[in-house]
Length: 91
Figure 1 (spheres, rainbow, N blue to C red):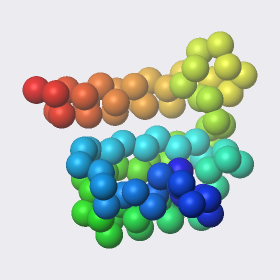
Figure 2 (cartoon, one colour; figure 1 turned 90 degrees about the vertical axis):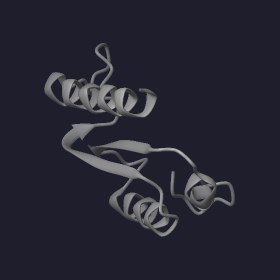
Figure 3 (cartoon, rainbow, N blue to C red; figure 1 turned 180 degrees about the vertical axis):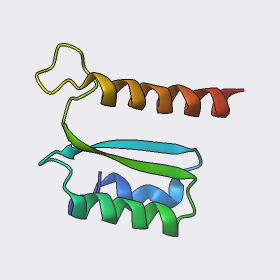
Figure 4 (cartoon, one colour; figure 1 turned 120 degrees about the horizontal axis):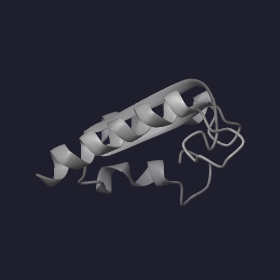
């Protein structure tokens, strides 16, 4: 989401016209804190309405019930956040 690749999503932040919610796993080698910070800065500069929330202590895949990293409390919190976003954005 914020890599060095020329097609990295953070490079298109200025084109975003929607609310953005990113829930990131606190233990996730594919989205380290440096990338999270880069993404947040790009979204802030582009004045995107966003929330970037780090789920401390959970691993990548924590919301999927049959995944080894599943975390019930974190998953419930994440789905509550998503449903709130959908409700606010779509009503």
